[in-house]
Every structure is written in C-alpha cells, then in structure tokens.
Image (cartoon, rainbow, N blue to C red; front, side, top):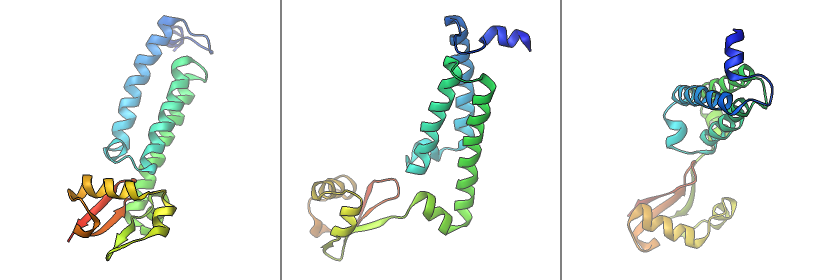
Length: 161
C-alpha cells in the first residue's frame, strides 16, 4: 500500500503529477458514485438532487488537492451517495417523508385566478408565470389554460383548457 501513497502523495502538498493521478482516480470514483446515485440526480435538478451534486463536488475536490486524507474523502462521498439513495427509497414508500425532502407541487393559477400567496411564497412573478405558460403550455394568455403549478423542481407546469 506504500506504493499507492507514493503514487498519489500524502498530505496537502501533492506534486502536479500526483494531483493529476488523484484527479484521474477521483473522476472515475465520481462517475461511479453518480451512477450509483441514480439517473434522477442530474436529470431532474430538484433541491434534493442538487444537494448530492454540490456535496460530491465539494468533498471529492478535497481528495484531488490533498486538503483531506484521500480515502476519508472517498468514504465521505460514498456516505453522501448512500444517504441520497436511502432517502429516495424511503420517499418512494412514504409520502410524508417524500414531501419533507422533495416538497410538493403548488398551484399558482387555478380556475381563472392567480394565487398570489403561492406565487409570493415561491418568488414567482407575473412575468415568470407568463413565461411558463408560453414555454410549457405553448399558449399566449392565462385564458387558454385551466391551471399552472410550480413543480417540486422549480419549473412551471401548465394544464390547457
């Protein structure tokens, strides 16, 4: 195992070659961990899913630059991936837990009325709403839709009349 530490270096002052080797190894490990965390991690971009990308980047970068022990950062990254998968699995079977970690869609327009309280709660402006109905509903005005929601991932969805 001594050869491995010679290859990747020890401490927080790796040589450029050792840092390149660390970057290569961490790239492969990050790719494996992202695949383990599931497709939805980078496909939906909900706050729950964004947490893993931010944390993995922060933790694994410490292994590349040598700011933390190499194997400790890999273990920490694995724990983050494991928790993400565990929480997603629990949310699959428990709606209350799913609502807590992922949130719920909220109506921002329904039955001809703009729901200002929900819009304010999610920092949605009238321009955001009209942009959403143009992009998602392919319509020009609120008169052409029956409802609009702010989804769990922050996108606006539209139901046409």
